[in-house]
Length: 143
Ligand code: DQA
Image 1: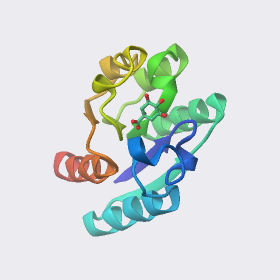
Image 2: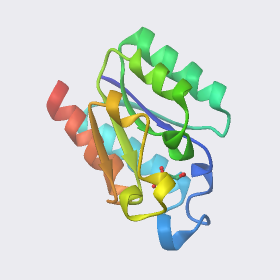
Image 3: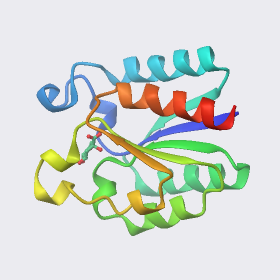
């Protein structure tokens, strides 16, 4: 099964970005974790990150056209991008929203995600393990 693991702005800086919030795992480590988990589970996993909203929209449109499953960390766009939410609404496969940090325990502006209402499920606060858990869920759900 095709699964896109899509990451929004600033997540390419994982490892050096606020490690007390996001941990020491680098973005390269995260890619390797998702790819290895995908291999173990027999999923066809592609991992991407962008700081450009239009690029994420294009990836979501392509995933919708393919009927693929998506694991999405929309990062700061979670909190205000109706464009990302609308693109997520077009997906035909399951959408798991992942946040590394517990957004509900942080600043008030992070408490609401405009994406969550159109996601199949949401994982937050479990660090990068959230991505691994999301892939395990998709494998059992769709396998
Ligand atoms: C994040 C939480 C967001 O509030 C923040 O803007 C991010 C990362 C997380 O993974 O915890 O960039 O989505």
